[in-house]
Image 1 (cartoon, rainbow, N blue to C red):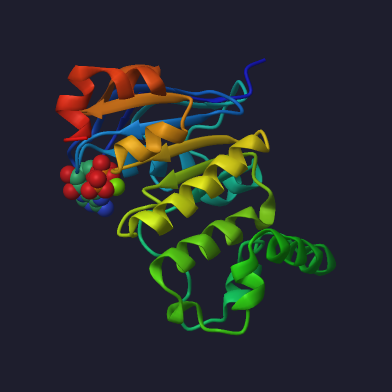
Image 2: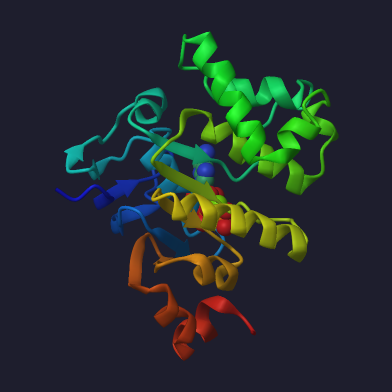
Length: 238
Ligand SMILES: Nc1ncnc2c1ncn2[C@@H]1O[C@H](COP(=O)(O)OP(=O)(O)OP(=O)(O)O)[C@@H](O)[C@H]1O
Ligand SMILES: [Mg+2]
């Protein structure tokens, strides 16, 4: 059975209007799929549908062959699907360490959570180094790294990232992308939404272009990067 994540005919929006209009998307197991598209095209809406924050009006979300459409965010997390949102999501007035522990809020096994936090601190040195500092005192890139570390507390096999590099300087952006590539080499399934389309596609296996509520084009990421039409329409000047 296909262990990936598949969207079929998704119709979703806010209030009266539809933003997604019969959207199909395949996120292959163990690979990075990068979804690009203009501002307001519905990229974040796709991730909200997957993580259960927004229930589609029609269509299906399939996870490893199972229909999980309309499940709650908590249910999706329990199924191993995590979402790192576009906006900053750490609690700024809590310590880095307490923020990381919050990543395991659905678990009641305190010993296991503490052990996992130690593993996370080894993998993400900033968590160990700044553990006592308030999360709000970290730079944007540091906060994003801690958000990713927090998300890894539950060891999710499927990760959705909403523009993780937005607002970061190029050097920090590269660090974030290399963390994503590392998570992928663990065999995780990753859906990456990116405004920095070239950088996102560069670490991805597959790419998709979202336009007017549907995925217009899907191809291996390298093909999208090399396509003059895609470059002209979606990637900006190189
Ligand atoms: N909570 C909401 N209520 C009403 N409309 C919304 C809401 N969230 C998003 N929208 C609208 O839905 C459309 C798609 O928004 P979405 O955030 O999914 O786009 P996006 O592709 O992620 O854009 P960006 O690149 O700016 O992050 C936009 O027109 C937006 O104004
Ligand atoms: Mg968005």
